Image (tube, rainbow, N blue to C red):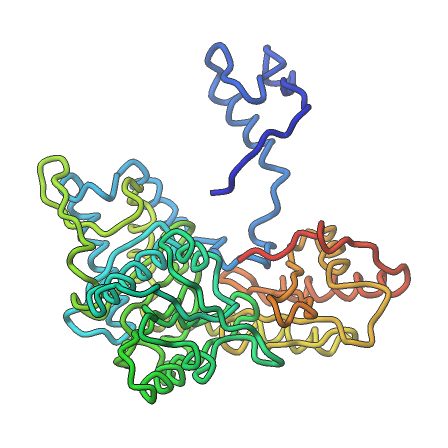
Length: 449
């Protein structure tokens, strides 16, 4: 969660609408003296939230912004169930286990797979990283300084993992048109103290898959024991359906673990993630705690503890509701719309696409080098005025010259909405070419994973 600081001098009271409240002021940062009518409290919070961006037109996020009403109903029914309490809610626990087995088999794991749900992919990555470090300690005695090899395009949770658990991040910079990790660049940074290599199936910078099989082959040529963790936050729920022949998962012996966000292309509202290990050897037993909780013994490997059962119920509902054919149809439609958008934007005139949405249904595009007078930050700012949230951001070190926009297509984003976006983008370009731009890159919204 973000850290919040004092805003300094602000009004200490918030005015309420006199139509529905007798007490016309509410303290901003303190508890009111007494209770409030529930309808008044609801209306006040509802009105405050009107200033948020619209989730459906937020093309920055990979997170699911639409769900069927049946899934929402199940989530509501399970919102008061603490899923960590397996004895009190054994069916919720069983649904979690079913989801783990379904996902493990989707990723070609054997019968010895082991896994768990998490609060999101960030927690899943932390758990996977801890398992990599503990395996390295068992293998080597832990005498050296552990390091983790990854591309500069990793999500910030991997930087946090390295900082929190004292692991040296060996970050491979981008170079030329290589925007992510590949086999040679990964192998060049591996040594006896490398706890693992992180491969990203679906880069948040441009939607591309990293070549997991190529990375595994390069490590095989080195003759090292270094395992691979696949951060499949988005792609692990896309590739099995749209790219079934692509080898990136447990079909590769070197892949020890995989994480995914159920709340991204797993099509569940926020926040649920999944971590799956190939077998018990990939998850050292000394990381798993057997907790005596409310009268029962419960094995647990988690950084969080209490969580509602809502997202687990919704994930299981979505898995059985759609099946292979349903997931394939939904994601194929998203990819089709992403590719339609990327083609159309590439034909618009001032833009050049880095990717086309042919892997993740997401793509990045930039202004052509000969365009001057305005920037991608101006484009992003003007689109926001039309209700669209399209992030503009700078690439990492060694490609900081590259400033791009990114569009993520999710379930619920229709062809009609895509055409509205293209119409608005064309208007924005016409306005900027006539008037020029003034957006400050430091204040233009930036990049959000």
